[in-house]
Structure formats: structure tokens, C-alpha cells
Length: 110
Length: 112
Image 1 (cartoon, chains in turn purple, cyan):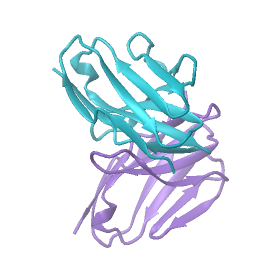
Image 2 (tube, rainbow over the protein chains, first blue to last red):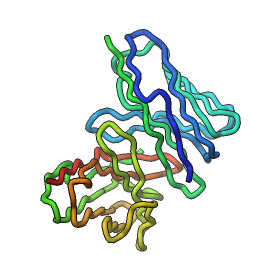
Image 3 (cartoon, helix red, strand yellow):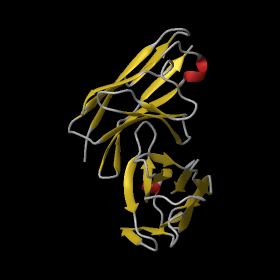
Image 4 (cartoon, each protein chain N blue to C red):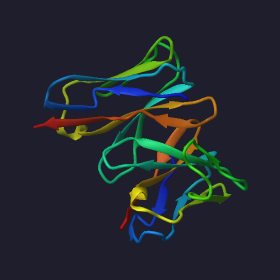
């Protein structure tokens, strides 16, 4: 069974601070994805990383895929209240299924 | 990207009854999935909805409890049968194209 772990589970920071969320697995995935979910809505895809060692940037968000394609990180620079939400990493398996990590609940305080 | 519509968006049901959730995608998707999510928690995959054939269920989920249909590439239904309070959850439909998942807003189900 392929499982994903995320840390931290909860994070509360002041506006303007930086933060990093980690996603780890003992298994290799075809790709890793990061989603953000707000209350009452479905998750929205932020980025997909496919190649080991890959780094992608989306404005203040930087995503990294580990060399062995088993782990990933999400770094947010100068967090803003609009970044508040549930951040989910997800792995695409070889059977075209996507499984989700437990999530990191981020709260950015103005 | 695909837009996914689910209905009902929420419902309150009595123990022992069944409810069918409908999922409509505005464009063809290669794969469709059903997930369950407790508020504030992560998503658990229930099954892959296969067009024209039986769904593929994940461990812990069975067809008798969660029958799924997918008559074409853009529509699927999930039925939650013989409901109990433990079935209270958010049920999310998703579609996949080229590895990207798109979600509806979910159906919040409360079983009394």
C-alpha cells in the first residue's frame, strides 16, 4: 500500500513569514501533486512535479521533488492571509489513481 | 480544465435510507473517481468509476454499500446505501485528464 505523510499537520504563522511543508513516502510515484483546498470547496491543483530533483515556482510558492521521487516540499515566501487553507500532497500511482496525504492546515494571521 | 458539478450539494438523511449523488463533467475526461472526506481531513479514494463496466473499489469499500455507475465519459453517480451516521461525510467526484485531477465542490451528507 502506497502511503503519503505530511508535516506539519497544523501551522499557524504571522503574515510575512516563510514556511515549508513536507510530503514523504516510502514508495515511488509517477508524479507528485500539490493541491490547496478552502472550506466548502474541492481541492484545486497547484502544481505537478514529475522529474526527480525538479523545482517549480508559482509566484511565492516553490515546489521541489526529491531526487528519488519519494518526497516533495512546498515553500511559501512571505505568507499572506489569502494563503490560508488545507494543503494536500498527492501521488499518482502506476494504476492512474491519485492518493492523498493527510494534509497541512495553514492559517496565516494578519 | 474541466468543470465538475455535483448534486445534491448537501443533504440530511435518515438512518437506513439510500442517497444517490450525481456528478456531471462539462467535457470528456479519461478517468473519474469518487473520494470521501471528513471535514478538515484528507481525501480517501472510494473507487474508480469505469465507463460501461463495474467500478474498481479500494480496500474497505464494497459495491453493495457504494454502487457506482458511469454510463458515459462525462457522467457518474455514487449511491450511499443503507446509511448510518458513520457515513456522514463529504463525497467528492473528480475527473482526470493527463494526470491532473479536477474536483467538484462536493456533496455534504449528514445521516441522523
